[in-house]
Amino acid sequence: MTLLKQVDKLFIIDMASIALFSRDVQEEQYQTAALTAVGHTVTCYPYALDSQHLPKVRDVDALSVFVSSHVTKDVIDAFPHLKLITTRSTGFDHIDVAYARSKGIAVGYVSHYGENTVAEFAMGLMLTLSRKLFAAADRIKETNQFSYDGLEGFDLKGKTLGVIGAGHIGQCLIGIAKGFGMQVIAYDRFPRPELASQLGFGYKAFDEVLAQSDIISLHLFYAPETHHIINADAIAKMKKGMYVINTARGALIDTEALVAGLKNNTIAGAALDVIEEENIAQNEAAYVMHPDAATHDLRAMLANHVLMDMPNVIVTPHMAFDTKEARQRILDGDSANITSFFASGSLQDPVPPVA
Image (tube, helix red, strand yellow):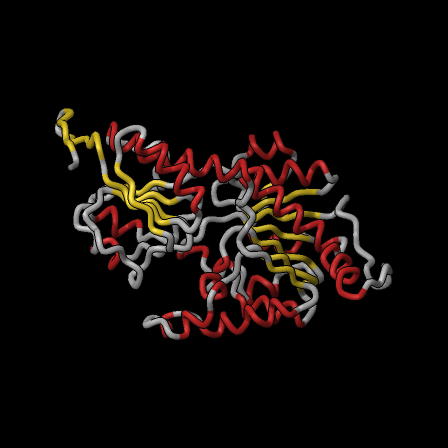
């Protein structure tokens, strides 16, 4: 049973029941140990949470989820005593944050678990494109041909990198890119001149970044105002022959427009760790039979297949975050959020205000 104590007019919960949704047994064991050690009760579910996959027992105080879950209005309403939702990620577009807050439910995330982790992966994708590393390794494995014919690449030194979103991850990538001798420009809604001076880059308008960059790398939160920020109009403004890196969220890019830009050679190549409708890509057969199949963008699903077959496109399975060290920071950050909330009523890492 949940125990309550009153501090001023705020009721604080000493012991809480938490539903943890995860497909990783080691994560479940680690986080369960951390939370039960301070008196909480944890029930683990080996699947992602959505309206079609709800647990039978819903009398819980908190939900802990990952980006594969979809915590919609219907899901939130299914848990009558919910006080907290946390996500083990930097992104939070898989949660209806505004609706949760309208019901007095707090929402937390892990904002700083992997700045270097994701930035390193983005640079790895950049190198893979610039030096055709995947094509080279695949040639030898598949054909045994030890030949570099047709694998000429290009130097990163001296090229202009455009960083779309100069937050924590973007700043780490800027530092790495400067180490490669690249020129860096960035677009951010909230420019910080002192940061630009410190790291040695320049802020530009969005259209200027598109027009001047040899490579762009996306590091934005997904929100309605950033949906398809890279669309047909944006691609038409790009420097011809440029490259696109996306380790942020798939829906930042209009997939059909990207395919068109690649086919007409406006874009020379793309490396994508995230794609639109990526949950469907994991198990298409199941989604075809899903009651909500009609709500998904079937054109984007088809465009994904076209992308994956293009020789100048690299697609990886949303793994930029996935290092041993980053996983540890994610789990510790999520546990700290939960523990802090039920001990003091405040989150260590609350989701920022949503427009």
